[in-house]
Length: 174
Length: 420
Image (cartoon, rainbow over the protein chains, first blue to last red):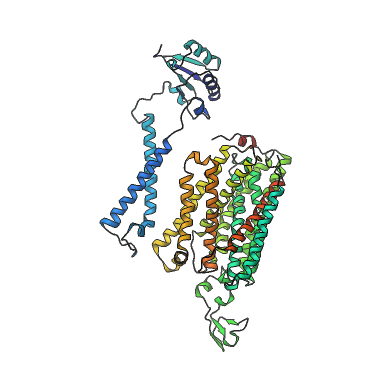
């Protein structure tokens, strides 16, 4: 039994949310929920931790800022000092206003691309990778809840009857 | 639920106003600058800053109406009460402009008749009213006060046209503040969706009008202090300052009201949303401040750099200090989601940049209006407190006049359940 996974299908996100609340109140651990759109308020119910993507974004942004500033420092001050409008160019701070737009652009560039790549890698949904979604219809109009009986102490039969009574339209074990 | 304007608050604000009046009188007596320039510059700084908060509120309210936003409905009465200061603020500004037009102060250099005429009758020099002439005639000599640059701007910068514009802006803005308030109270009684749907159109009209006049008002009232200088970005820069000052005040005021238990329907998500506004508009302000600075710094054209040369040579620490404070504090402290939901962080950042944006207005007006010496003394602080008292008194008073939560707004229920 340990290898089997229960997939319960719902046709309404609110029904699924209520069902998830009832099940978790009984101590059932829900592994995952598949849905065509974000279900409002589902994260705390099924115990999904807050995303750390923002922290990654911040770090990528800092890397971008550092790269841009140090790059421009090397190109424009150290290696080949540029005379722009007769402005002094002995030190970085004398020309820093001119470097701000590029630093900003590079920060945004690295933060945005880094976050997008991290997101795809973490979810393992890069092009060519087989989707892990068990039912293609969850990208259309159905919602699926994934429960591993091995996570839970209550029996599979009880779990199934609970799912049935809370509004699941189809339950599959595989 | 009704908001009660407690006796203690009334006394506190009255004390602030009395401090302000004392600061005004003592300051006026001890002010030895040209034509009491420092005193009048204080009136303009405070008059404009608090007027700007209520104007920002009016703009924000119109924005909510035009976009039919639901999340802000529970805060609507708070925003409305802030807009009601606009009548007092407009009065203060009009008093100031009358004083300027009557030459009681020389904040606006271009209001002086002498700068427009190339020649002056020699026999009348030294009298109270020298006779200026535009053409060389018998008995006329070169007018040493003649200013070719200002004379070239006289088609726009002349007193009659200035007054027409000023009265137009103030009149229309005040009308909309009155009009939106009236319709909001009407909606409480009548209900239905008719008022709500029509507000959208009226707000759109206001926003179009505001888009033009917020810029031109900034040119007329503030940019013309440094008459020789001009910047096409200035209107936007002032506008972003107006908006962010309002957002800061809204955040602080809402948090205070919630702490006192007047607004139990405001949840963490509402606070988070207005915190995001404060964060985002701080960036808008920084962006515009820096864009204006960098373009002028880069091209280094003499007629453009004068504004910055004066501020950097005389007020270097304060000038750049404000920029970094108003930028770095919101950015570093309010960046994460949790910080925008933590009251302590919001209050800390809000209070710091509230003063920061007052100093920003100070920095726009004082170097050109008064000149060189940096002085934030008893007069500045006292008059700031006085105007703060007046502002808070007006806002609290108008908030206590109507129920603190709107009734019958079509999105009220949705707004109460805001969850982000």
